Every structure is written in C-alpha cells, then in structure tokens.
Image 1 (spheres, one colour):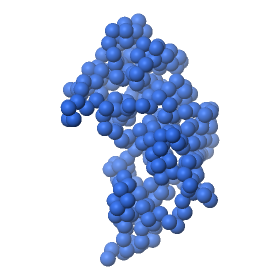
Image 2 (cartoon, rainbow, N blue to C red):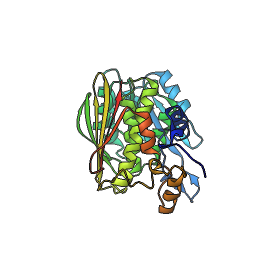
Image 3 (spheres, rainbow, N blue to C red):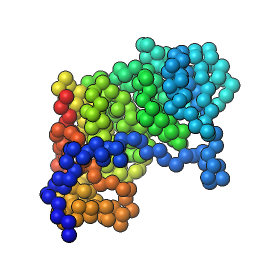
Image 4 (cartoon, rainbow, N blue to C red):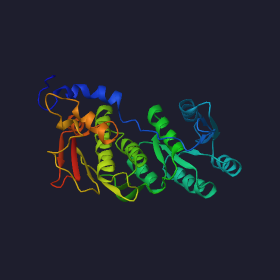
Length: 317
C-alpha cells in the first residue's frame, strides 16, 4: 500500500502549475448545436468589427478554421452593411477608446441580429468589462487579444444554445461586484472568463491562481449546490482592496460537512491517495475532486460557513 503524508503533500504549491497546465482554467467547450448528420460541423460565420488592422489580423490568425468564415468590418457603416446582408453566429466588436463604441454596437447588433453572440474587445479597464456584462455581451477580451482565452470564448459562443440571462449583475463598483450565475457549466465558464478579464491588471501568476481557485469553487457550487438546475443560481461577490482580493460564493444547496466528502481528494485516506476518483466514478460524477485541495494551495485564506454552502477566499496582493 502506498503511504502518503497527511494532507496529500504531493500537491504542494510547487506542483500546482503542472495541475494548471493539465487541467487549467481553460473553459470547457460543450458539444456544438451545429452538428449535421451526427458528425459533420456546419460552417460558422464570424464578423470582426475593429478599425485597427493589426487587431483584425491578430483575431483572424487566432480564430481561423476550415469550418469558419471570418469577415472584417473597419467602421460603423461597414459593419451595419454586413449585418444587414449576412447572418453571423458570432460578432467581435472593438469597444473603442471610451468604451461607448462597442456598447452601441452591442445594441445595434442585437436589433439587427438578435441571435448573434457578441464578444467585446478593448482595453483592460474593469469598468468596461462590467459594462459588457451589463449589456449581456457573451464575453470580453482585452487587446491585444490573448489567443487561448479568445479561442475558448469564441468556441463556447459558437456552441451556446441558451445563454442570454445566465449571468446577472446585481451591483457593480470596481471594488465590489455582485453577480448571480445560473447553475449551468457553460455559465460557469463564461463567468470565469469575465473574472480573468476583471483582474487582468494583476501579475500573471496571481491572476491564474485567482482564476483557477474561483473556477473550482464556482463549479463546486453549480454541481453540488445547484445540481445543474438552470432555475437555480450561485451568488458571487468579488471585492478588491489595495492589499487583497476577496471572493465569496453562496450556492443554493443544503451545504456539506468538511468531515464527509468521500468524492473529494481532501478526504482521501493516507493509504489511498486516489480513493475519491473511484468514488466519483461509482457515483457518475465528472472527473475532478481536487478543488478544495488545489484551492488551498492557490490562495492565502480559505473559509467555509457553518452550513457549508458558502465559501470565501483571500488572495493578498
């Protein structure tokens, strides 16, 4: 039998980057609704609206696929002509220097093509990200658009079926944001992407630690608290001070006891470090179970409420 020190020390923080590389915070893209005859993808149509030709080229190089058609529009009139003549699955719209151009485009696209998914691009100002969420944009990417996150959010937009009210802004100041997230995995992925953008001013490793911890805890709330019930929601608070980032989540479930988590790695006996994998397989749960253990290595403080349906973490800056 394999003896492992208490607390599964082989998940020391030095190993976390490997876990992130393997599982990471990349969003899970769910099966496409565009399947034809069961195995052939129909062509997807994308419109990129931005006056900057370098940005256009970056986006095109990141998103080009054999099954995609990408059209470029360099101004308002150009974009409107495209929208009036051709249906688009996804529209990527530059937000402009003051944030208003992209928001006007969101409203115009929604008028001309209500079913199109709109992803805003622009600077990394948290206020612009918040406005994108308020405007019910599908996603937001700062410029220059990072290839991995941009590819993820575009693919998820192409695969999305019903998404318009999955993320609700309850209140939003840059230092205190409150969201309600529908208990759907797709909604969890979109929210994680928005959080990454909201904290884009942080050092890369800090941002990835925070994003990974947030995603694990949110998905736990969606899965175990909300039972994937789209009528239920997880409430999220994101608070920022000069010295710390504080995140709190409250799920709609009955809670749990930290002493009774057979499906989680944190509860594995010393002589069976992967027992939770067997438990999850027997129960038909998704692969995982490392959330609490990994989160403890990623953040500085991790607290659960007495009932077990509320969690808060602190990352010192």
